[in-house]
Image 1: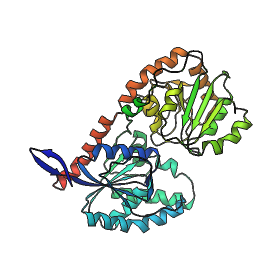
Image 2: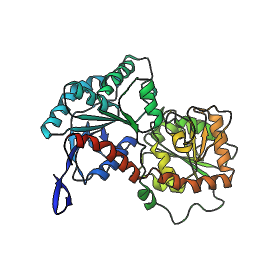
Image 3: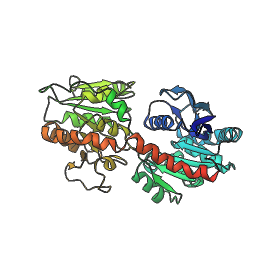
Image 4: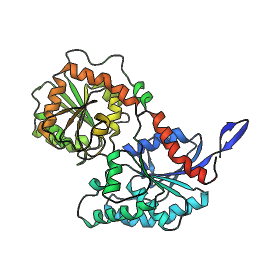
Length: 400
């Protein structure tokens, strides 16, 4: 496949395989989508997935989408079986297509790719770790203990590991004893996309203060904590929007129990979140665990003040970049780019929300800092960092 024209000669594109569970709507999938858009002009990209039907992003038409297996359920025991089942398929495809660089995202593709290397594939493996691995696979169950064992053994097969936060990098090095070449490339935000939805004017003066939270409804995003905190607010005029997969189904009973039905709007997964972000007055992240919360960058790109739990990992690196995790909390931390709260503390989260809603000058200060901070995570820096990470592997293989 041909790429850019140089001195009248079309240059042959470099082959690159990118391996991810699917292209459904999720943080890692959004990063893969943005990366493919940036690289597709120079690379012949083969997008390897387990679910070819779940394509919810407009993947560039030049990219080949290849299904290399199928994960029919999310049980971790099935994960362990499937990585050995599908690794030979991936290996055969890479060899048949003459692909020497494989870039994997998320645990299942990463572990499968590690088995591909273990089976003797001679290409270059780059694992992109998107979460705090020890916190995600934390239990004493046989499945989680086996995953932790496999991470220690199979991640060592990688020629490079890319994490999306410094804390995730530290986790792989200290908890799993990995001595690979590991670097951190922060997730990006598409500023131009956010600005497409910018309204002509914000909420009218005197209207209720609106908080927004976006994320699938599960233990990790911890929206139940957010609802309990919201019920404690002194300012009963505030409103809350919670948006994400399974949100109405799973949170409506708690809203009724806390008598919040008339103050809380529960919405399922939306095609685009930016209109909702622009309509809010502040964003609240209540997560127990994150990899690197893209939604904080998206909220900053909509000039929103931020309140966040100080969870592993990402919020502190975004909102208080000159400080170290963990912090010792006695009260809400007024950080450089937002308010940080003790993880899983409803009382402190409620205090932070009252502080933001009741102090217009503080909210305005953070709103004015938001866009400049978001621009530091723009697509340009992200693309440059990934190109720099990929370049040595193509030079080593004799590619241009």
